[in-house]
Image (tube, rainbow, N blue to C red):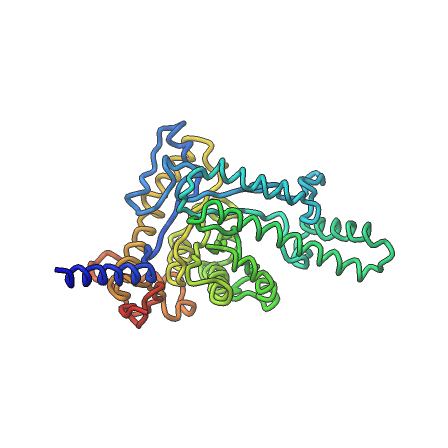
Length: 409
């Protein structure tokens, strides 16, 4: 009896140790980050997201248990220049009252993310300036951050020449930007440790030219300089929004390809195996608000799965939900285009992860970058009850090894 008890305790201990070292997760997730609650509240139009396996906050609210998106100047006292030229919170990172900022970050999170066991995606959307000083010279509306930083440096070191002032402005700006962003993330992680915290739009690729399927070497260099940001993030949130100004579905597919490739590169260099990757997608072209074609849904959502992302976050603007017709149009598009495609991808991801990767890893398309978006999706078809995993390989979760993730590590 005593020996049996000892063996049982030993067996349970081994199981506990193994389970603590191993990891399971959903093969691919889609999260609704759309301000569509007005449709039910004002127009009595409901979106049935569950039938398409799309996760959403309770009552499809914009902030909730699945995803929280902070727009600037939240959380805290994000510095920026307004369109009228006036400074908000000092305008540049160097002028932020850091103690007040960090206290307000904590307060904002307590108010807007009240659940201490928050398990969702915590996303901070700060876009008015780039944390790499030189990158602000590429966009006319961001030159003010260069100029104001130089003015501040000149006021502190009036005898220095322009070269020295420029260098000091860069150092001061980047040190302050890092302090602001890095500690903001750490406060969020400390207060809501189970959330997947990160900044929207990182890493960036800036591949806006036709058929650019790679980031420039300069962009990759700038991203490498942001290693501290990727190391502090619990999830990467690259943006893969598409414009119809790209001349073809193929060119739009390559744009997404470049961003996802850079995300994979950054993740492999600077992130831990536990760091998630969720691509921020939408379902409208950014230049005209028309709904994506089926091919571009594939180029964004299907390609995100094939690349190895953990999921996509579907975003839309409140300006697209002003009337009953707006809500009905989105509901129809969800019902007949967006929703069925999302469900196909998630179903395939789940079947592939279970069948090919023993439930202990996710499927990643081998040589996905060589295919077009439409070709990528052919294997996802569920019109027949046979799933073809031939073009996929496994990326094992923590605690598992082997080509089929069936060997404990």
